[in-house]
Image (cartoon, rainbow, N blue to C red):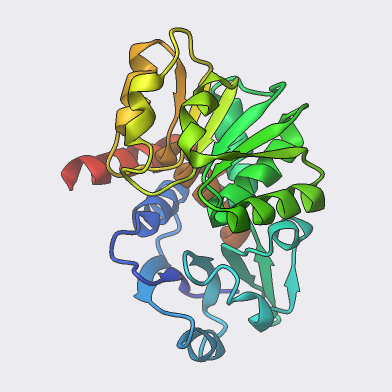
Length: 275
């Protein structure tokens, strides 16, 4: 389609989102001067009206919480990746008006780990059991050869994680959150919890840690990430995930590949430093 193109990130709350910074950096690097990317405060109740009002100038949407599942009934099609975790973070609006949903969090996690040389692990631990934890399990279905232990706060959360494991083909074992320090012995630890939640185990980082993937990017580094780095462990951060999933979104929405990873990461780092 000729003429200006639009894209945006939707969610609630949304003011903190770095997506506009990353996507605009990509557009600038790719010479897409007539593309714009904005953010809109949209909750579940307002989502159908917002999506229904989009015209053909729109190329795509990024979705954050609480919209990753709410968007699904409004779509014409979703990818197998998105269907595997019942979560869509990317919508591509085609020239014939179709809405196609995908999940770039999962391949984004895999790409962020591979960038640090992590191709396969024998086992892993996941701290937490929310929406990001299910995406982590989907990523681990690709890179983890053995069992995954999920550290959770309740039996209900444990049942959910076990169910996701069965669906994704991952051998999930459940442990109590109170035993979270044991998770740090795993070759790969994925922390999917809100800020401050893992601070209590930062003092328990082993002498020779493996790989930590902490999905937070603000505040950064977290106490756990700092302690991990201090013992020379490999740390993958939330900005790594954010940049890699956004890169895939840019490629899908614009049809241009490869998207400029370095420029997007630099823009994200600068935005975080300025806050």
